Amino acid sequence: MIRSELIQKLADENPGLSLPEVEKIVDLFFREIVDRLSAGGRVELRGFGAFTTRARDARTGRNPRTGEQVPVDAKRVPYFKPGKEMRERLNGKDA
Image (cartoon, rainbow, N blue to C red; front, side, top):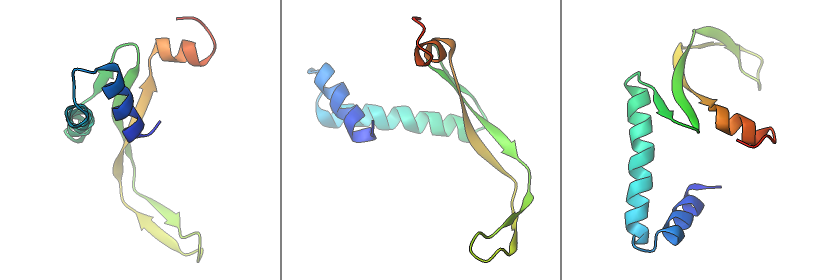
């Protein structure tokens, strides 16, 4: 599912909201997740999972085209840990 499909599905299931209103809600939802992660926080959605960040150390990488070694800076990357209910549904168990 892509963002526009999510917006359309939410609009279809909530006829009291216009498409622009649903789009604002979805934008706000994702923006808040990114803002919280950027601030070093965690976002937990019960029954779905938790978004956090993990630190990656600086390292020496390799340019795949030339084979030349290049330095890769340390960075934080997003990480998602699915909740128990999601894991059970994905593995065919009824939650």
